[in-house]
Image 1 (tube, rainbow, N blue to C red):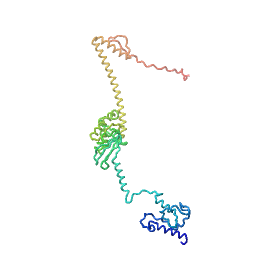
Image 2: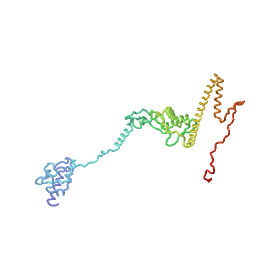
Image 3: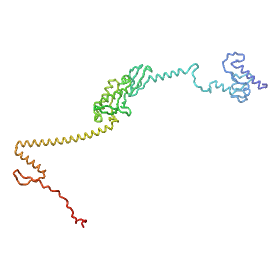
Image 4: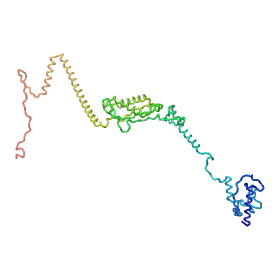
Length: 391
């Protein structure tokens, strides 16, 4: 450009190059302190108007032009600073720097941090074991059962070195026999079939034996309970199994079941057996009702026969006692006793007879004549003239 404005812009650009760290000061070396160049276009410097530059003093000179280190200062020239250049310098000085997400240093990866987190989770999850108040834990080292853990926080070697199995040893557990709505038919001593349903109350007595002695403790308990109940019921009659011996049945079955479990070494303790029902199977229920009715009738007949027998025995005993008394009197006075017995017998016999004894005495004794056969009295018949028909 020609003219005063173009000469002034060209002079400012030359002064910037002379004082720039890349080109060095006039007459100096290029080893000055490193500073980023100021990419200010010459046409932008020429567009600044007086009064727009911040910190401008009287006479058109700014405060930055009076400093000795001002790179824009030149002999006989006073350049103006652009606003974009000022903002860029503020950003370079650390003011208004935008926030950025943290990134690992160059050359590093997230893999070590992830592996460390997985290791912490593995150690914490397989080495720390909280044990409840009614629980116990059995520690297995490489599959072999070892020590037990008391209630609290148990610490072991991590998996797969040691594993822990926690069981509730304080709770009473229940097992229904049979499962569901099925039948469990058993045979009594008198060859009768009975459908028996019951519940077994049990708990873990020895955790070490419960875990390591048998493969399936629940199935072992079920088979042992069935064996104990069948052997107990085989010693009772059908009537006893139906209700007269329920208490003895459950106690004896629980005792037999505990003996079987102890012989197997299961570590299970039996608290008791609760009998739900003892009834005939459904397929013979009708016949069983008929049998029950017949037995009730038989019991009634037997009771009546026993009552009649007791009455007859009492009557016979009374007659025997009376005969003994008469015999004792007969031994003391035979003739008197014989005559008295004759009179008593005749009075008893003739008192029930309808014959009439006449007072005549014959050669063979008094004459006895039968009474005349008199017809029963008939009601009077009405005369023909007494009724309305005769008139």
